[in-house]
Length: 446
Image 1 (cartoon, one colour):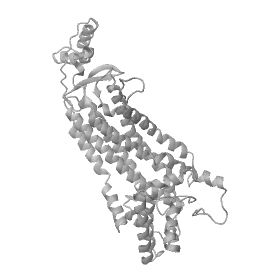
Image 2 (tube, rainbow, N blue to C red):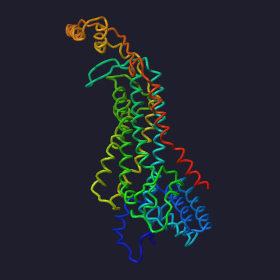
Image 3 (cartoon, helix red, strand yellow):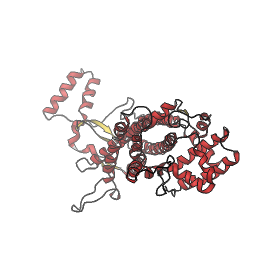
Image 4 (tube, one colour):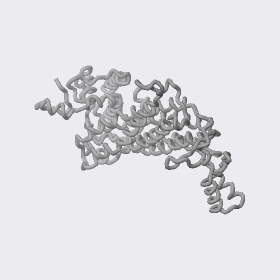
């Protein structure tokens, strides 16, 4: 027999039931441990205002901790006919404890319950993503330092432009990740506010202690206004999606560079054979499929903010079932992006750099700007030096001096990797994950 927290005596048409539940049971498996964690905080608060006895609280907490362990180990199941994770948890409690299990929903709606689950899930996944970005960042800085003296062509309009270096190339993506995490830190702040107690969006006549659940769950603050707490559904996901899209954009560009530079026409880098795939017809092929798939997956992720916006941008205040669909596009994205981060980190560690790219004469004109600047330093006006070198190029008389001497901040000779690393340290410190981890551990361990 199906169980729905809201059902009375009339059973919903089967097709309507299937359509409205949709993929919720599948998506709610992502939320299971966080739903239990939220319930543990909620009932602790209920006991403090007299809606549960201390004995009931301890009994319920013991059972919820057991369910939490099941969810964490991946064996939590939403049974056939059970609508969602909230119903499944309550069913498991009532099977074990009878009517006592039904008391956990006092002062709560499924609306603020799922809001809470989404925020607890999202902040945990943000922490995983930040750690993965940090690992890639430190590897990029390491590779930047390792290859800082190896020159490569820089391009504008896909035309040979000026000397660059692998130090600059690796370091550029490292610094890009710093800004990506700065945006993620802002999204994390928006996520890390407590909606519990807003109920269906209009509060409760029970004397709820919302600050208590905020502290128990390690949130920075409440979503104070109960109407706004509900309006935050979709907004939080969209904001976090923009931050995820920023990281994805950095990875996509790096992947495109890697595919381009790995091709024989460029030959700037080489991937180990075991990191490439072959062709069913061309025996010489070694394809950079990991980077190509990363590019595609990350380009898809960059469309996520638009998807979420289109689902919720024409809704007035209050709850609407439309918001359910956001879970389908939002929840799996973290794992997809983190897989890309993990693989790009693995590939970047194994990249072999061509240390003799500029020996090829086709890169001779790369040093034309260096020659113009050299003459300016010798006293020739810039426009005259520019014209002199331009005419020598047109007449085929230009002879490059393949020495690049750049000293200003962020240039070939002064990468500022120490400054970039300091920026990253500052961003990482600003998340304060330890506050959340300590609060959650206290709830779980009692």
